[in-house]
Length: 404
Image (cartoon, rainbow, N blue to C red):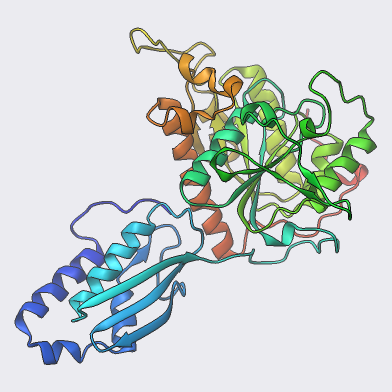
């Protein structure tokens, strides 16, 4: 949900001004008579969701409305606790109801839980049913900073008030342990289920690095890696999460197909750099999600430009405009351009995402912008009933061939 513009002519602000002017003219007795449930709901229709293009009453955001004399209370049930304009909604609601004559207005912000629409039936041992939105983060190739983007998106979502988890699906090159400075193992229960490790920001994480030594290589064939992914999907006690980010491995092979077949993804974010060699593989990542019916929220252009720590000048090291071109060609938005900053570049090695350590950096601002777009776009997908993976069961032979 995008922040509302501060235009004085918005419907909500016009209505608030109107209510205040009437309140000054009318007697307390006349004004208090307006505090009926129907009058309050009608008045609150002035508050519009800018992304869903409907008012909060029509969207059933206003619930549990109670009127006790001149005191009014109700819940504002949003689509996500990370809604970037939740406080603006609350302030507008309080002003409108007070304009009807209420002496006290209590608005409790909360959010819906669970997915809307058809989703694949989960195995009896699966814990994904308590996860509201599952978001894939992929790149098509390695070396573009996909795990860095995943870690910082997760931290940005967590700082906004959401409950967040990360599934590190890169079996051969897991990096989330290093990204968050995790030095402990997950708890394994008698029924062979796993409790994720809680990292910085309260983020729940499961990664292959927790089950293999840092100096040991995971030398597995494809079926073994896919089976491990199945365990991560179905045997991890994720609990109630608003967002589970899946850090995809590079490429479009067995693991990627296992994830998209067995995981009800609400959407995907594709990461690239401006250089052409990365864009070529980014196209394959976009084509993969298109083939299996997972909508792409947008493209993140990482290492977009270099910021000199001495003069602050921007340098386009990896060319320029690649992210915009591929986003335009595929009809998806470019949701962030993340720069290279020397101080921020060390964050991954130090186990603290840039959004947490350097919240005022240009990189952190880009990640926060991307996270806000993810929240808004997934809310639209959820409201429209789109963006939820149906029960796909593609075999290799059934996947559409990509034009060469």
